[in-house]
Length: 213
Image (tube, rainbow, N blue to C red; front, top):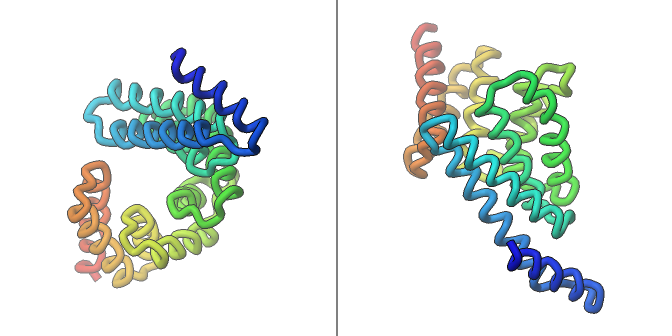
C-alpha cells in the first residue's frame, strides 16, 4: 500500500512541474490491466463467492486507476466492467438499482473520452437492447451500435449474439442463424469459456427456429 501511495505522490508532483506524469500513466495502465484481469477471472470463476471476490478486487483497482487519471477511457471501462459483472453475478434487485447509475456513468464516460472504444460500444449497445425503456433502453439505437462493432471488430462474439437474437425476434431467421453460428465458432476459437455456454444456447435456439419454419 505504501508503495502505491508513493507512486501516486510522485506522479502528482511530476504532473505539476512537467504537465505530464510517466509514473502516473504507468500506474494507471497497470491498475487498469489488473482490474480487467480480475474481471475476466470473475467471469471464468465457477462459484458465486469467487466471482464476487474477483469483481470486488477489480472495482478497487479500477477506482484507483480513475482516481489517478479520470481522463483514461480504459480505466472508466474497467470500473464499468467490475460493477456490471458484479451486479449480474449478484442478481439482487436492490443492489442492481443502487449500482446501476454508477455503472452507466462509468460506461458513458468511457465513450465521452473515446467514442470509438469498441468494448464500450458493444456494452452500451447490449444494454440499450436488454434494459427496459424506462431505464433508457432503445432497441434500434442499440442494434446500430452493435452492428458498428461487428463491422469494425469481426471477431466480436457478444455483439453477434445480441444482434442474432434481435433478428430472430423479427423473424429474420437466416441472418440470425449466420450471426449466431459465427459467434459460436469464435467462442470456440478464442476459447472463451465465459461466453461459450451462451453462444451454444443462442445458436441452438435460433437453429431450432430456422428448422421449424
